[in-house]
Length: 106
Image (tube, rainbow, N blue to C red):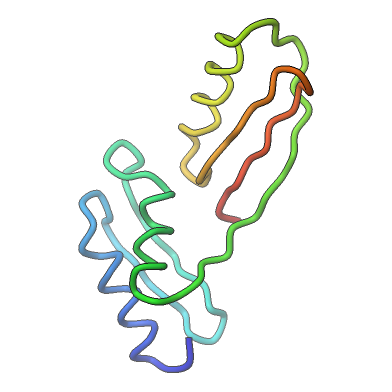
């Protein structure tokens, strides 16, 4: 983002989404503060809107060790639990390696 118009465009795009109560973009820090209802909208939807208006959002990634899984049902349960977290954009769990790869908004 290079100007106030840029940050305003991101704010307007986010504000149009159902479930977004408020969106404020700080041009100097290049950060957005978004108040939203995770029951109505997912973090991935917020990322998509920011991309749609022409910007690249920063998404962090982490790999986590997950012990005790024994079947595909366990994998699904862990993935669903991770994806319910408001900042998580995506989570992929691997039973064979006992690891979860999580993409999230820092």
